Image (cartoon, rainbow, N blue to C red; front, top):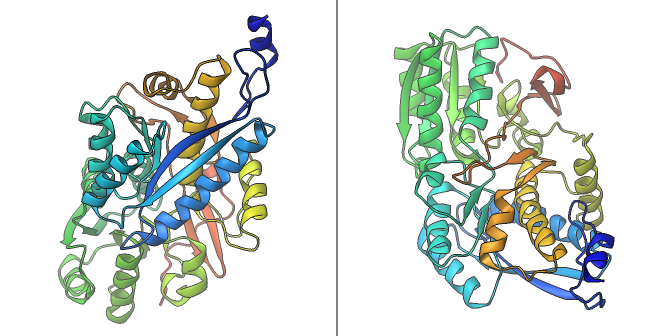
Length: 393
């Protein structure tokens, strides 16, 4: 009888739980979320939290009200030490697993703390591959460095750019991305000049002046966070180096840049999973977009929300698969199920290697054109053509 009940309660994406004896008793599953809701990364953390809430709604709807995810959320204030304290607090409150995190230097200590206490942690906001090479068994990462560096190299190759000045933050993830890109570009015969800056830098005039007078590149590659890139673009607009284009990494080709900094960002390329206005052609994308509209009526979509959603979906799907077998979620059976993930999401395909790194992740290239963000690479997903040469001034 129990076996037949199990057959009847087959799971789809986030699916409903079957109960061991067939009785319809609802369960509330506590899941921890540690995010930067204040501090330097607050905007990113709040965006991820919206995505996680969308994933909760999707799971709860799929369960038909039989079982629900209960989020327990703690603000790590964008600080590594407080991310560790957040993980320890969440575990003391009985969560079955943790998701969230933003910034590799903040996620790293949190992941190590979770691994030490043997609780699965699915990161939706770290890209440094080095985190997954530390022997952690309970850590899973949906983003990777190659997913950012490969599109940039492809763009530079497509545009036949011969020389690049890379202006990059010394923060862990940005530094790794800049150096990975430098290596790949050099192998492709592109001349690369590297200019590092501390994360606290606000005046980029000296660096851009050096680029203008000494480097004289075809393009400037900005590897930093949004405030860094705004500062670099401001300095470039004033000094007007003789370049052909500006290329950004994080959060350049996004709606708020179009709305708030259009004069700085016209024709600038950047990594972007979303066109603006946003389009969601895939099945999971349609689920994401519908719930986003229900929860956050009128608000622009953000790829940061996609990160939070996809990371949480991976975890919730694993919880669902464990419970569909009639088992109670535990750190070990959840770890095993997360490792088996093989799913298409709004973020793209997700599948983990033996180190817990999603090897399928790949960003797109967008370009700000007028009041739109146009996807220009890869070709099969393009919503418009590249403007090149093209500058904001």
